[in-house]
Length: 594
Image (cartoon, rainbow, N blue to C red):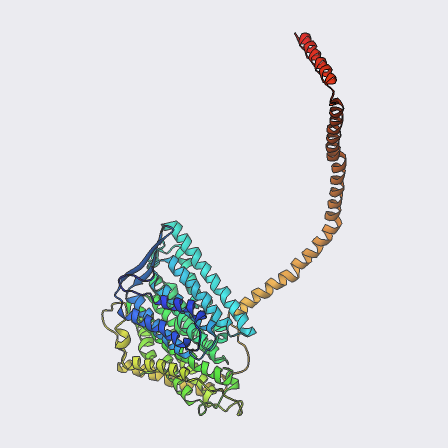
């Protein structure tokens, strides 16, 4: 059951229903239907009480479609809000298939959020993979096609890790329940499940799919993708594996690694993709540390990140829509030509950088403070270093070379940007500012009880943020010649994937090809001759053996038939004589034997 008599309407229901009926809706007014599922989802999430809903027994298993608690509700809330912003941003798109796949994708994210067992989670997990793959492919160019295949392959492998883990777990404990695992008692199947989650969370070194695929997605599809895949993975890691030490270390590595690559990238959407790796690193680190403050920080940062990262991708999407490119070496001087895009983008850039007055400030500082209070000093320092790189690359480098630097092409023709794209960006920017000014808008929904409520608006927190941002600006001034974007592709761990590919190609094209050639010669010299001799022997046996027996039997039957035909003369006296002879023969035989 997806809906119950208690009034809970699963948010995924509206999206899947729209995906089903959209191909059959005629006319031009169908685009307004795109707003219905998000509005219903917001209403559902804001009105439902915590509890268990939508249980279904199937093949002896109880599937839980509606586990509603504070953790699932806060993620579902921001998913619903972002789905509305994303649909508004995409309303100008005439391609129905893009909207259908977006609905499949978003519906999968809601399904994962409310899943109470691993089987339900796995089904919706794969629905997300299918929908998001099409959001890459539907850009309909060779680069997107290749990136989509790599993306789908990567997520198929991640899904297999999850499937193997849940099957191993079911065999071991006889349950598919999705609950928290004690870090000190994790078994092999728990590690396998967590590994599958880490693929979607883009944990280094399992992250290369993200900066590969997201820049190639459709203008609107990448806005959805930046919000849901990694944050759904954050949710399931938080649900099942908080307190696992390896996540704390891996998350900090992600935070630093992502900004380092973002600083040297040229493609704006690729810069933002690496910053997804970095920002999700804060969340993964908070989950791994496992205190109430760091976990609430992870939740708050996921919420804020969805809003400002969606706004960042909407801004670069406007650049791609208007200018036809997001490569910084081909842009410049757009501040006066696209002033609203620049202004709304800067709201998101200041938010991700942790500038006071914006929502990144109230979420990122919570995780870093929680790490410091948990005496994880090196992790806190790593996240502070990442904060410097964030402002350097997204807050200064990207807007400087896109909007203010000397234009690479003074005669670039800009395509007019639809009003709905500006409206969606304004919605996201408003929420980024509102949450920064009124943190309780977000803090009231945080799921984990803390002994003392975190207060971001302290003198020390504000000074700390301003000092970091000031240092980042100074660093950009001295390194502006070094980080000038260049038209090149930077490889990270996909370098090793390519080495594996080249190795496999070399193995097939050289040693295996050599072996195949010599095997062919050996077969021609020995195997083929042997087969010919075997064929000759078969022919001889067929002729002299089988045919002799079959032909002899046929001749015998024919001769018996000839004799029988002669005996049947049709005269009565011949039959009486034959009967008498037969009777005498039988009598003689009996007499002889007696």
